[in-house]
Length: 115
Image 1 (cartoon, rainbow, N blue to C red):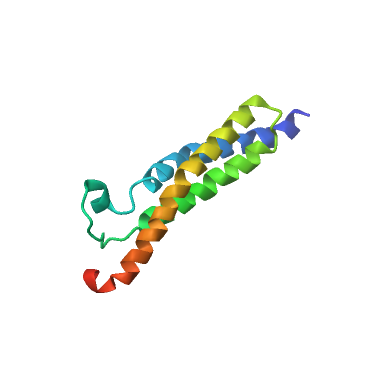
Image 2: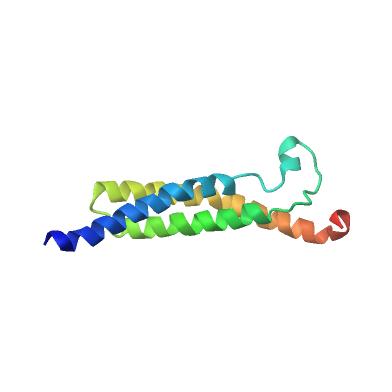
C-alpha cells in the first residue's frame, strides 16, 4: 500500500514545483505589451509584444492546467485553495494577453515605422 501512494505523492510534488517554477514566467507575462504607453507616450514599440504574448500564453497554460488538475479534487481544502489561486492568476493574465494581441495588430498596421 505504501508504494502505491508514492507515485501520487511524487506527482503532487512535481505539480506544485511546476507551479512555483512557472511563477516567474507569469510575472514576465504580466509586463506591459507596449512600454511607451505605460510611460505616457503614444509610440509604437518596435520590439513588439511577442515575448509578453508568448510568456502570457505559457503562464496561462501552466496555471490553467494547475486549476483543472487541482480543481478535480475540490473536497480537499488545500487543493481547492491551489485551484483558486491558479484561477486568479489566469484571470490576471487574460487582459494582458488581449492587450498584447491588440498591440500586435497595431504593429502590423504600422510596419513601415519599425522597418
